[in-house]
Image (cartoon, rainbow, N blue to C red; front, side, top):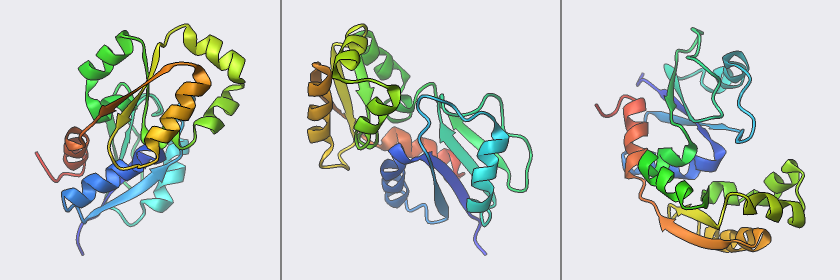
Length: 192
């Protein structure tokens, strides 16, 4: 039987992960969707393992891909070995640290197509209405910047709605999936 590697990826980045696996013909990869936890990291590896062990049970190993949502430290031993691909932000997984730093330093609030699919739910969970959201975002952002991977044809319309809601400029930055695909391939042991 062929070895299987599970890649646990946030639902916000799952379409990009699927595209990378298809493009690189990584047929032994099983993508395991993680619920987004952008504003509250997983409390510990035990709770994350409890979620992933059943889904990754047929895999030889599971690699958890994430950023601030991941618990501190490294995963403890378990029935299925866990590894991590950790970045400072999810945006850095797609575009690299220096690009993300440059956009943020010029006042951009970064979003992905996946996050934009549920922006209204996120704003509601934060407890904002249009007035409080605008006041909060005006403190640090001049624009909403979509890291556009080209996979979601509705992303620019949702960007427009979100930017209008916040009364901010909207910008689009096309992002190739090469760097993200390289990271996933290395994590899955497909590429040195």
